[in-house]
Amino acid sequence: MATPSPTLLVESTGRVPNRPMTNCLGDYYRLPSEWSDCLSPEPVGGKQGFFQFGPDVICYGRCKTGNVSSTIDADLHDALNDVSLAGRNAHLPFDPADLVENLRRERYENDLLPRWEQLIGRKMPQKFYYFMRDLLPFPLRRTLQRAYFSGWENIRFPAWPVDFTVDTLHEELLKLAMKARGVQRVPFIWFWPNSAPSCLIMTHDVEDSGGRDLTNELMDLDEAYGFRASFQVIPEKRYEVTETYVHEIRNRGFEFNVHDLNHDGHLYHERQEFLRRAKLINEYARRFGSHGFRAGSMYRNADWYEAFEFSYDMSVPNVAHLEPKRGGCCTVMPFFIGSVLELPLTTTQDYSLLHILNDYSIDLWKTQLALIRQRNGLMSFITHADYLADAREQSVYRSLLAYLREMVAREGIWAPLPGEVDTWWRARNEMKLVSCKSGWTVEGPESERARVAYAVLTAGQLVYEL
Image: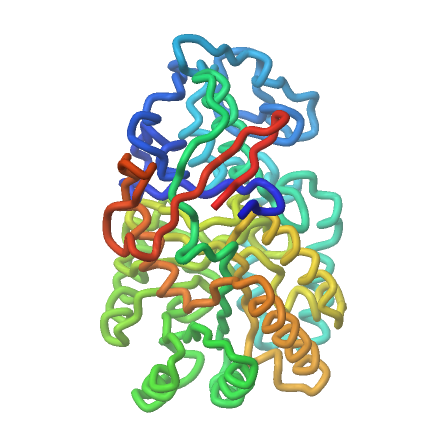
């Protein structure tokens, strides 16, 4: 069956951080081995900056042709005009793997900081806010947060409300490779198990004792609509985490994950302190038997993830206009940061929707869901027991669950726990497409759940077929 529109998926190598990838396009799609050398990047030196690759892709990195820009608002050089097709390969004036890593790891982010943050930095205002946070009444905290986020709607990059830059880049590269080899149809391993068109995961962060005490009520609510979720729980200082609490969550088929260390906003402030905290986080993960992690307030530094021992992380937004740390990984697919699998947040948090945007409808979520489904991506949610205690907020969440239940049933969407996505994506990363008499077959772990799909070039566009 044909999907409504093309989708680009994420490269899933699991390589060591900062190590160059030699076959990002093949890894991204899980293409046949003979496509491993379909791209020929030129060696590139010089400074990093912004440039374009066609009208819809903003890149950040080095480019051999044309000038790169230190600002996103400049008239950017279009490197697509510098690509040549020869010898069955697409010859590129940049290293695509480098561009993909720069976007996923948000290495462009400092060049997009507001002028005041460039001058004084982020740490001092952040430290002051968290020092005063518990002393400020909630309405005043919300006012300060809205002031911080003022102008968010004018940020050009990443694109709101969902950014597909990494996905579209891979699509454009595959189209060029297919044109270079004169083919209209290429097999690849479908993104999700059992032909599911896309994936949905639900997660709940527990920030205070009130949220902890409402965990069972939130599980009741999820179960009533046919969902299971992961709970991210803060192990130190905020509230007591008992063995009984852990077992209650797991015994009902939900996941228990670690949420930061103490949620004070300082996890990534300084390298040595981070390493001390990461060691404690790893100890808590072993103690609780947890495989997943999310940092407090979605703070992150992908280049430090090698210190973590958990299997997957959920701290990187797709587009972070309404997060304390701006940026975004620009993809709606899981991807590896070293050995850690990242499950990006692809929808707006409940707190941002309700208390920053003051929007008590699910219209924004519906818009984001529609866009992600068009690209066969991961739809991931964060909601908080702490913010769903009142009737008005809970009514919004019930409306969301009802909408999701109908959508999942109608479209056959895969709705697993985050840990199940981690297991699948790691298995897919080990699978191989093998030619056989009947066409193609998939070999490797969990291959019985895998499906062969085709990228079909039609009138200059890619369409995926199962």
